[in-house]
Image (cartoon, rainbow, N blue to C red):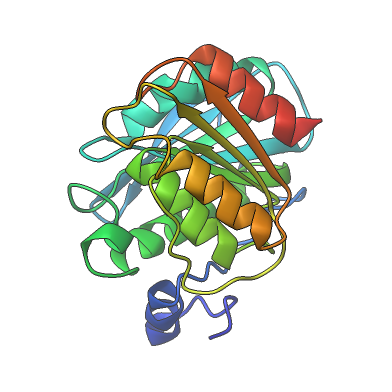
Length: 231
């Protein structure tokens, strides 16, 4: 299915296939989103976008997915301060269910919400490049959805992922993965190590950062992820 089909039933088919049609770029068509955090009302679903206030011109955009039971606000709390200090715009959506649709029966509702959020950002923010990241279930989701949309996301930033299950593969996004050796939620050997090894074997450019710690996102890890993406 053509990922550029964003109308009517075509959007539903693209969502089910995990394809995103929105393409944020350097020349937004609508009024600019203000600096600071804006809540987007997407027909009863909520997303938040945080725009840094210092820089001008097109800026990098990081789309970030929370862990199971989380919210868009928690995503911003995890990565927003570090990202904004680097001039990066952050977009976060909340999953429709307790976790992302891929883990509860198949891609669909959450892809459609993300598509609508990306369209709003594309209309109001000048964007130079786009990455997709996430934590825990959100990291598994980011890797899976990102591998299917490598023509949109140039990098995938995965904090403590459990697996990948892409509905397809498009492009060759760079991949950064971090996993704690003391992670008791998603053990490192069968999760981070295996996922990074499998992606490298499939020909992706993978950076794997293993650290002493548990199932966490820290400012130092966010800095490492952004360094890998932006440099």
